Each structure stands twice: as structure tokens, then as C-alpha cells.
Length: 295
Image (cartoon, rainbow, N blue to C red):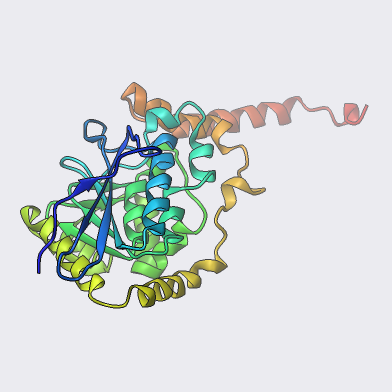
């Protein structure tokens, strides 16, 4: 039994600029797999809203192709990816990126099991995309972690507490709040990935896992995936950023500072902003005349 060759999906609706969409079939088992690759290696496969738009079209097709049993998510070049394009996000588009139909939701709502094929950097949005996948196979050079607080790019909604289900509450908070990076072996130890293999064996390992999945009932896998994902339905898709707590975060000085500092290649000055705000409040309090309040 063997695999056929990858064939790129082309035609009307499949003219992609930021992803590569392919399918291949197993000659012995009869089923196939679809692979969605973020194809921006020169920018560490960073994502914009256009990337997610294209991923949506590919996922929609894969989920409605009855001959496809598994979807693989990958990144081109040396890295899986480093999350959202910070330069793009800087111009006020972060809210649209997270609130429209995030890449995580495509995976969570996928009817078919999704396997993340991870090499090199797997940071930020790519990290939580990988741990939301049903399975994650990593090369031994993979590095995992979050970076949001470093660039004042917060995240909320289901994919933050989802990590608690994967690695436990303490480790999840450590990863999200402290922005540490973890090797592939550390990720395996904490349950963040299923298997670690040498870099040159990564695609073969993913094929082997997909072969096992194709050997069982595809209908049962769809039911099981939905059953596992149903556990997360108690979490809101969107959370504190879009609620009453921080609705204006992306317009606030601190919310803009991280992206600005990244683009300008300098350390962010978060505490300068905090101190300036405190001084402004102090001056306001000193100048306030209660007898003039309310006219």
C-alpha cells in the first residue's frame, strides 16, 4: 500500500496567494488527505486576514470532499509560523483578524480530523492553531510559545482556556503570560505534541499517522471529533477584548505600542505609558474643583 503524489488544487475559487492547497490519496485504503500550507516562508508564514480567507476556502472544500479523511496544516520553509503579521496588525486590523472567523475556529469546526505538521518556530497564532488541532507531529527543531504580551497583542475566547485542557492550568498560564519558548522534547513532555521526529522524517511521520486514521471509519472519526470539541462549547468564541472589559484595547496607547515597537525595531515602552497615564490622572485630581462639577 502506498501514497500517490500531491496534486495542487486549482480552478475557480482556488487561486491562492498566501497558501498552497493540495490533496493526495492512499492507493490501498482508498481515502485521501488534504494539506493546507501557509506559503509565506520569507515572512515566517505570518498570517493576515487574507491568509485566513484563503484557509477558509480550502477547509470548506476539504470538509465537503467525501474522499478526504484527514486535513494537514503546515507551514512552508524552515518554520511552521510565527502568528499574525505584527506589521499588518499595527494598522488597526487586529480586531478584524481575531473577531471575523479565526483560523482556530476553522480547525475546531472542521468535520475531519486535523493534523499539525510543525517544524522550526511555532509561535503565537501558529502555536495555538497547532494545539487546537486534533494531533500535532513535531520535528526535533520545533520551538513553541506565545508572544502576545511582548507586542501588546492580547488574545481571548476559547483558544486561551483550551490550552488548559491540553497541558494543565499552571503550564498554560506560564506559556501565555511569560512568553517562554519550549523545545520539541519539552512540548512532548507537557502533552503539547503527540510525537517528535527528526526534521527529515517529519512528512513521513505525518503520512503514517494519516494512514492510521484513514484505516478506520471516517464517519466515526467525524463523530468523535465533534464529541471532543463539544466539551469546549462552554467557552465563548470571543471574550474580554470584545466585551465590557477592554473594548477599546486596540485604540489605547498600550495596545498600539507593541506593534509600533516591533516595526521600529526597539524595545516596547509599556511602563512609560503606564507612568504617563498615572501622572495624567494625578494632575487631573489635583486640578479638579468639585464645586464646578455638574455645572
